[in-house]
Amino acid sequence: MGFSKNQILKLSGPRGVGALLIRDQVPVRPIQSGGGQERGIRAGTEPVPLIAGFAKALELLNIQRFQGTEDPLIERRDALLTGLLQLPGVELTGPDPRQDPAQRLANHISLLVASPQGVPLSGRSVVRAMSCLGYGISSGSACSSSKAAGSPILEAMGIAPERSSSGLRLSLGSWHRDADLAPVPIALREAIAAVMAD
Image (cartoon, rainbow, N blue to C red; front, side):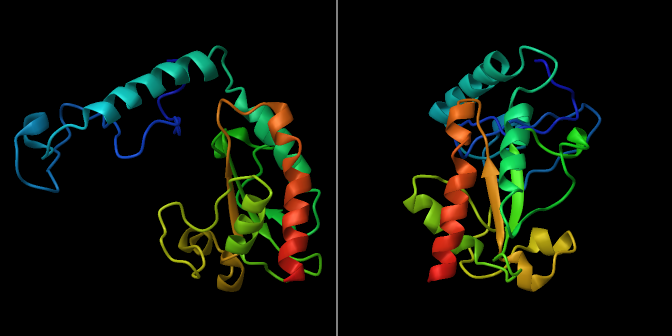
């Protein structure tokens, strides 16, 4: 595959399956006992449909995203990010990938949203407003089930607790085209206005 060994990827495969590459000399202990699958490292019956889906996602990843030396999502992400950051009250979290691409996943944008006066808005409320406009984005930590708490990830990055619940995450896929992404900043402006009006 055409990406470096240090690159982390979301490959759009099914949930509940993954791959773990282990060097011969690295000791690994199971976290769940029972069964002798994978030389005693994993218990349980293999989810064959998920494994097949994972394999297909890897195949498509190689075909769709890595024909050259640079992930084509980088250009789309950067164009979308530029449009989003022109909105009053929208702020990037973490390093700016347009200045240091190596510090960011090619398909990921993380933002904080506030009113034009700087009052943090509920990220979850903005997500709901975007959903009403036909866009699926996320708020909070990727694995969090809390409905009101701020993001511990954003807080660990030094973002104040009162602002950490205003986070938004946008993930791009290889299926997104420029025409799909161009209206997103306009939709986010409408969503922010709707949340502020409530």
